Amino acid sequence: MKSPIRLTLMLASAFLLFTAQKCGSGKYEYEPTTSIEIAKTGCFGQCPTYVFSLKGDGSATFNGRRFVEPEGEHHRTYSADTTNMVFSRLIEADLYQYEREYTDNVTDLPTTYLTFEHEGKQKKIKLYYGYPEELGTIVEQLQEVALTKGWMEGKAPEAEQ
Image (cartoon, rainbow, N blue to C red; front, side):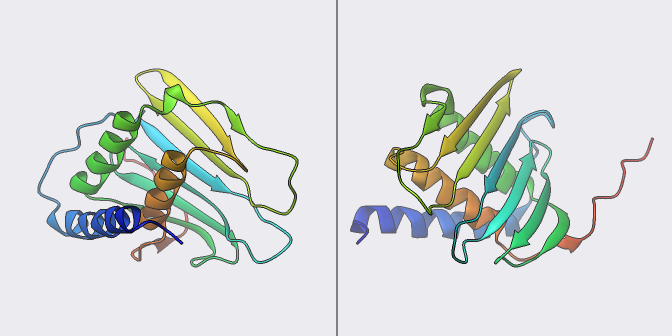
């Protein structure tokens, strides 16, 4: 069972995400080269399998592979408020402090890969088993962003030259 504090924080995060998406009044504070990607692998059951990426300019892609909606390649642009909140939390969490891999001799769990790029530095973390609770919370928050409605099917339109 989740602790009441953790549940409260998750609900507050979800509320902030949804209200921030509707505001959209701010400016993007991060360069397009700042990015986060979460990739979820399958398991022997019906584990959602997808790749979600978000850039500092709000552009995002979602490729739903199995047991997740939407399936296929989709794109969207998140508001500056939502984008800034996601990246400020990632920077505050200091992903660079964590190990590159959390795993053990356990079978049939999905693997989550986090890849974070900011200011010319990259950190890739493999989360399978035994990872810190803080990383689990980050994954849950990113999933909330990734699985919100509003995706447009297909690849993102090419930027005008």
